[in-house]
Image (tube, rainbow, N blue to C red):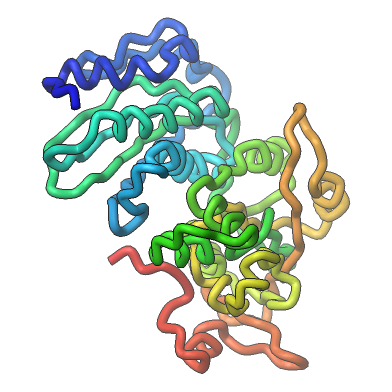
Length: 345
């Protein structure tokens, strides 16, 4: 294994990404990345900047598997891009901090950076700097700067009468995590599908941009901690009650066939789909976008899974059960599930 000092390592790794995606910037390699604001369009109109950061830690968010190093790079950046997508924004630049344990293999780090490079090319994102630090555990922290041309979508915009929608399918990433944790070497086709969804999420950037630009949605969030938990954030931020029809939620077919219950999949997290609320007047436009092709990119399936009602307690998520309505937290307690989603602390 070749041994590099810190700055040689930085030069070596960042050479694996494409610095020409954002012309005219200075970095990486200086104390700060220097960006011309006008090159990003920040000086005109109502444009807002979006800044988000996420940390991925070995043993918590990913496993130290040499065959999946490229996926670590991919996912570490994509979880931050998913935050930008939820706001309806476009990503521009990213910085990355690597927390490196002693003796880590150079090829492993190169593969992580090749994952970063894949994301950079796919989503026109420039990696302009970062940091390295010695650590007992491998971890990756990503910070992404993006923008929107008008007021960003937020969690707090949901209104009584809105429909509740979700993109794609729910639960595959949670199911995939269970097989990654077990270190299963030989996977069936269904198991492989859910593992890929866990390791390779796809941020719904175009969908978020269309929701904002066409004024189709009132609120939005990315499904990172679990569908029920994240919709709960919208309910609390907007001061409304959400009613979901569990049977309408598009649970991932492979995950269901592998025996995972709907409630488990609704609370598992890491789907990185978009959940959003929209007025009934948006239904036709959203149905037209469902699985369609826009700007040469295929959009995910869009499913209406509930509504916001005036007679529901504000700040809560409810589930329809037969002819009745029950608070989601009570259903989870009854089924022995402690929380509606992933708990970070």
